[in-house]
Length: 625
Image (cartoon, rainbow, N blue to C red; front, top):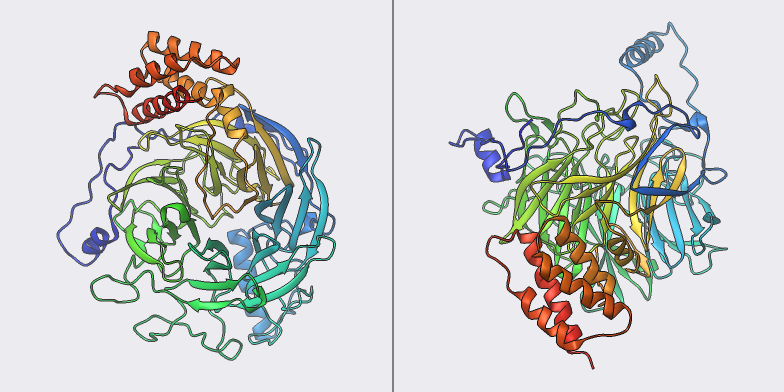
């Protein structure tokens, strides 16, 4: 299947919808996206904790089973089949007619004990769960040690950390203000909670909920946004995807399309301000209409939903954001907003403003977004099927349920290509593009990503037109015949290791192994990039110290791409080895800096950037005293 060489903007898409003259262009790009094929991952044996495994260029260090009270095989969600849905409808009709008794309620709601997203603070790994959250000590080289469990049902349980505060997303109607395990029942319930919980975790032996910010649509995910000048203020961008609450339960919450109800809770995000000296006073301070039409101001200004053309996806309407990834150091955020990918100016974080948007007919539901380190590319994911369907089968289109890689050109999102997990998965494996982050290797854009029961994958998207997989880890399905929802919810690089949250099985800890795709020096450089706190949707710019491994990493990349003349490469490697041995030749370093600064015109952009970075590094080395 050919990759689209021109991906439509929302404005162009709208012109097609409403009859304006426009032509959808599709042609073969410089590099074709291959169809989904089969490899060792396609035929792994099933099992909950004994499934077959396949791994390439990674090492599995630990597999940690769920914490006590956060696992039950009966709680694993199996989406109903078409036949089961028809039987349920027939039963409901019979109950209404008085000819049958209602079935007893299910013991567990869907995904009741599913692991969700991760965050890290110091040597503590925090694992979100629909039933609460857990924390693990990961300071040693051994298996992570459980140090905290908090039962607080309500889903989805995504977490973020700031200092001694933990923030938790809650969206389900069952959730209670007091974290109680008894469901908050009824259409209106004064004890119901949907929104952002705030915990004080200064004492891990006694965490305390100190605030609960109620929102009209709950909280599916959230993003922490630091104030650019005031370290006593933190903002939260709340992404809500659920139904709107009754105004009798939470004042000001109203549903409906803006033409009928201009105050609708749809078509906005929540901006929550947290005064860090008094976090219990956290409150919503803005609900910006970030989807509005720039010319008319109409609230519903982006994609209307539906299918474009006979071969397009059945796409979502843009009235919400699923994930918002912020990059405060460049003043931008990338929103994956159901029917569109959008770019936001967050220089004033209380008033984010949309500056660009992107639409593509192959994207069913824009789910998450990740910038590259330079901030000139965004990798968006498409959660076709909602994460509970098999969407990585051999017959599934390779541009559906995939990554869409876009560049940012003069402040405008421009779609370049798609990447999808290349190994076909079984009918009983829920699989689609999901959450991940960057591995901080200088000179490359490496995305670590979860694919539910497709496992985890590392994707090199340095060339936005030719993304390629360089490593993976996968297990077989939970069940060979019935789709049981499991697999990796998210996979993140945290301070030198990969932590991958597994919905039904716990979480995994992995490390990188040198290969023809990734050298020992590149791995060593990435492993030295450390951060005190890591929240995946709050992106920070990696900083690499001047070190022999950094120079070697660039040289390994240039050798891999034939991007450097052999004699110059040999001179540079000799200088690096002397530097590694403590014998810096400043004159040789200065000479190398000069030689590397002359970049031939035909040099590809990635290699040109590597040569310039290497030249600058040797220049600094030559000036050392």
